[in-house]
Length: 371
Image: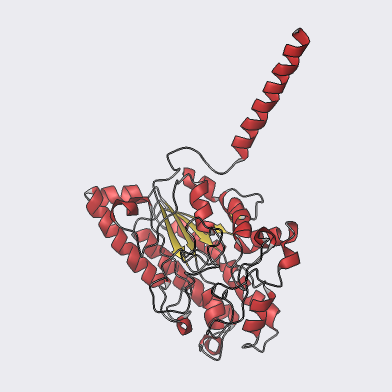
């Protein structure tokens, strides 16, 4: 009997320890209170969760198979399920996803707003061939409107600024300034106006001014995402058809120049702006590691959904109600541009809590939230 009790006790202890470790390692927090009071999101299609739905644009995907794995279905998210910002909201303890500016209202804005817009860029003209979109400047104007409403709700500007200073701000934008601008010389003049080095400098300077504006509106904890390199073969073929340079090397070099400028830029902003904490997310490094270590490279050449053209200059989006692969967790890309939910989850885990010293600078979002 004594031996039996000892064995049972050890079994219970092992179960308890395993459960404790599992809870400690899990990034999904069960606490009712989020780690920060609010979460504001700026960006392009990587982060858009419905802002383009009612715009006059071809860059909107509020139809199946987009959202096929999302509980609410096709909401305007450019993937099969959750976006990086959805995962980040979960990891920070929010019990709901941050609403798009297009539908956010009332007291909901006190917990944050998503301003991201598919096709948007740092430059106003980026993505314009696809139709309307909310550039970074327009997103800042929308945020200014939100801040004015929060000031009214909280009673005065001082209280509002104190409240907003505790929030997390994620800014993931810049890809369209290359893929929907600089890399399409038959449409945009920027390629003829600037060398890759000059363009990266101009883009970083404009981006820096926009981030200073965000700081003026109360932001103090800001995560700035770098841009990833082109990976899906179908996307590369589409872009390279309009650019006769040694395509992949040319694009990689140009984007690297932009990314290389972001780390010193965020360091400078943190140093020069009052109470500011800007961090840099090494998106390229994280994604490269994921593709190389998780086996996604097997299915990197083809998107999960059927892509044969949707009337745009680039046939990159999923066909409406078209074929979609069943093993979506094994695919790197859902359409020809945007990763699957499976990739986004792995990426966001490392964005939130760095696994390598190179994942973020000077620290990760988990640390930023605790400041």
